[in-house]
Image (cartoon, rainbow, N blue to C red):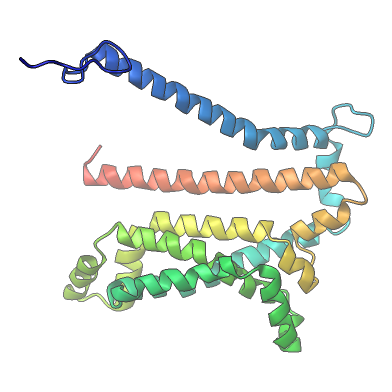
Length: 284
């Protein structure tokens, strides 16, 4: 005689199939916990933002006012710091992609056994503190290079390398790179034509992600710019805090919201292009 042992969580035998009611109950319990975790995470991240935005939208008397935001462009040094950060961000992103895209493609295509070594090398900028890197370079860099703000772009290229390489590595791993290159070469395409017309369109999402991460890093980096003596946006915010905390917090909130808008535009652009590509291919 076969006996069925009762489960410890209820009267359902272990050997019996689960009823739809039991499965629905477990799914509901899982969704409830997932909702709780999401609410706690949103509260953890959004509470400081709400407090900062509320303080930036108040005047000295505690009343609602947009004065901190409207006066921001006319504050001393703001425009120079903003445009310097913009220049550094775009130069860093351009140099980063020019260096890392061919490197990642070559490693995937010709030297796949070196991928673990590349993973180790590209993680080093996270291990080495930025303050150690900037002090070491400033002590040995020539004067003409130290007098240029674009020395920071070199540092930022190094700092962004772990994020950019892993984004490109994930994009290259998602496509059949060798087959695409061989097909293009067999049809008479040059290496440049293959890179521009075949590989890069398939890396659109990875390129956008790498660019967004680089821009976010440049707009948020403080230590290197401060030690190098250049007033970027984070440095300006720290320096102007002694003058007016409402204005500096408004600048920080504007920078954060601007970064979010940029990232959202990049994501929406990628999704719209993906939908357009699926329509051309005839897939839903």
